[in-house]
Image 1 (cartoon, rainbow over the protein chains, first blue to last red):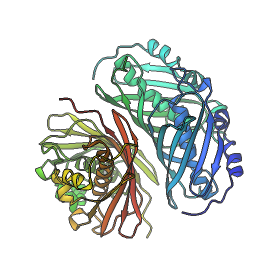
Image 2: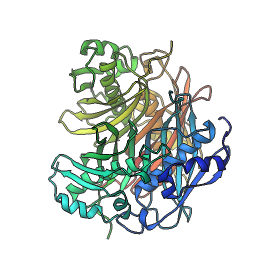
Image 3: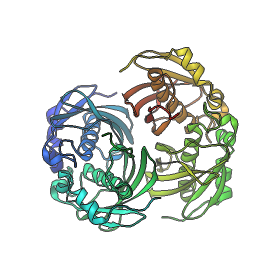
Image 4: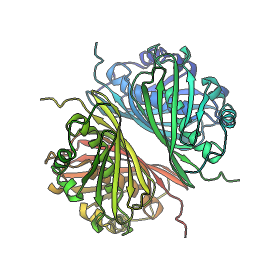
Amino acid sequence: MSANVLTAAELAARLRQSPFNVWMDLRVIELNEQFIEIGLTWRPDMANARRDVAHGGIVGALIDTAADYAIAAKLGRAVPTVDLRIDYHLPARMGELRARARVVRLGGTLAVAEAEAFDSDGRMVASGRGTYFTAEPKG
Amino acid sequence: MSANVLTAAELAARLRQSPFNVWMDLRVIELNEQFIEIGLTWRPDMANARRDVAHGGIVGALIDTAADYAIAAKLGRAVPTVDLRIDYHLPARMGELRARARVVRLGGTLAVAEAEAFDSDGRMVASGRGTYFTAEPKG
Amino acid sequence: MSANVLTAAELAARLRQSPFNVWMDLRVIELNEQFIEIGLTWRPDMANARRDVAHGGIVGALIDTAADYAIAAKLGRAVPTVDLRIDYHLPARMGELRARARVVRLGGTLAVAEAEAFDSDGRMVASGRGTYFTAEPKG
Amino acid sequence: MSANVLTAAELAARLRQSPFNVWMDLRVIELNEQFIEIGLTWRPDMANARRDVAHGGIVGALIDTAADYAIAAKLGRAVPTVDLRIDYHLPARMGELRARARVVRLGGTLAVAEAEAFDSDGRMVASGRGTYFTAEPKG
């Protein structure tokens, strides 16, 4: 696998160019050559109908973003999601959520990355993988 | 396939028990025996880094919720998502987004539903399907 | 959606260029502008450990091939599978199996198609969807 | 994660109860507490239309079976596949193919396992994950 070409600070700056990422208050927690960790702090406005559980859309966005940024660290830019699979294992209760992501396969047109999301007790609440479009945008 | 046991108004009330659904301002647009349509109005705080495109997490949450509520209409309650696949076809630009969902298979333990999301020009921006847990929650 | 550019006979000839398709004895049952149906006759050497049920790999290959050929009918050639999701609904018992597939989204680089597989009693035993690579192969 | 309750020899015997697994000549290559490896030797009758490349259905069946047997090692029995995602990375050319699988989440009703498939040059040709039904079959 190729080496990282962006630092955690550079990825964090890029991450926060998205207003919805800012709303979720996504943060880069750790970056090394093997994985990236992206986290958020669960807020009541992120809840599903059970008010003590995060909405699946929040958990899915965290998984997708972490997998995307595992690729961004290698390529120097975030990439469009082609498709995404999320597995929900446990309700994500109040507290910190963090997703650890790694690149499975980095190709010139498509890449695959996967991520696992954990709550503040270290329980895996969700996991997943996505295909991302890595070809240079036309232009 | 079994008949609907909830009305659009009942599903809308249930939908809005989730604070994140309220934040997205999800609405039940149409309900019949074949499908349900759930919609939202794109806001700037839902954008990704390209400020004119909705974040994939918003589109994914819309697809997941529509598929879930296609099942809820038949069962009388929303059900936990086991896993979800989202395919992103086109950037979802400013305006209305709506997802039309139908039940593929309704079983006593698991169900599958699928959804297609369209922008206000009628272009399909995303589609997907999920597996949902339909067994009665343990008392 | 664009019109078909291959006939059922042309697709059937192409299908049988693959030795494993010949082993499965895959046949084009129907082709029109909306969908393609591809079928096989269940044989004992296709069984899983329950000798009266087809192996999931056979059902998955049928779903994948049907979805691929829905695209092939429009493009004039079969295309590589990028990724695939299969949902297994019911055991596929002895008899005929047929998968009906349609194109969800046909793009210049990627396409999405979905399929539903039925047994000879008309029960849906599996369904799924895949992403396929539609860009011209490099010369 | 719970300990293995079956040996490699016991899993191999169970594997070969399926006629299609016998046709593919699937073998248990390695089993430890972290992963299982299941392999096959590519034969011409497993080819797709490019006669030097394995059919995706064969690779998918290998991934599915490896993920299933990673769970079987922990539970003492193979389990039905609920749904499956396969990512195809590279053409699987002539030679040995092996899939290494591990359990991601083992629950009382559902489990998730993932697998990566490699050719004899150690290139990852495909990867994927599935949801499996782990509840006891009804008597």
